[in-house]
Image (cartoon, rainbow, N blue to C red; front, top):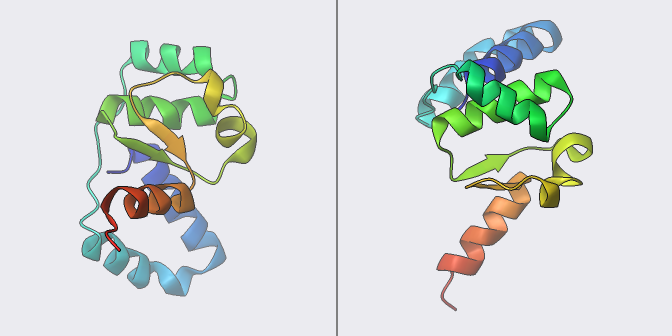
Length: 110
């Protein structure tokens, strides 16, 4: 699940930095069965802004809240990873590696 802001940002970055990769982005989104959630409500955005003061990141967090995510996966160390203990939500916040480690811990049977 991805929010509309994240999807738009990914599209803009690929178009700007590697426009020839646009078909690959489309294939990746299709292969991953990526779905887009609805835009968050004003109330969800305000709540997210109470947790993260940087407005663009608060918007992305509000999309995760709106989507009722199980995990919020990010590389943003400054606004999320370092401060995740102060962000108390129904989902976990971590890097892609954190999520993969959780799967390994929960499902790997030696």
